[in-house]
Image 1 (cartoon, helix red, strand yellow):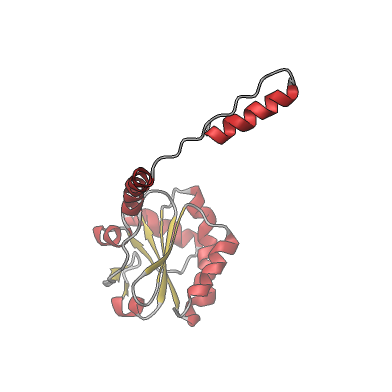
Image 2: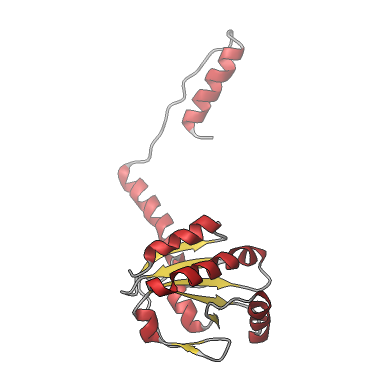
Length: 187
């Protein structure tokens, strides 16, 4: 419990029993140097988990045998999602990703989803069964270089035309949050 919490708790219980003495607790704060070092030490692991600051797109081979070219990706903002066919949270999010793809393609927003399934066929069966038309590829070492190692599912990133990762989200997004990614179209 934080020192302020002890004081609040003591005051609460003192009110319940007016005869109980209230002893104030001294708050101890670390000196500024110690605090900076602590914050810096905590920031390093968090920064290491973040996606690369800049994505240098290369051609992506899709599970349907087609290619998504680096030139097309560089010319548009890109919503990239990492998912799996067996992930229930991905299953809840993907219909909204499809809607975003359908509504924003003409406005310069691209979508590409990277599956972590063990086989291409598992990802292909999932996509075909649900009628998804957004581009899907398998996660590769290159994808991990762009977005880091997977930590949760799904993971969603937005990369602007300059190749900068301007948005990241780990875990399922609500429909209105996926729809709000349209704000990146043309950027």
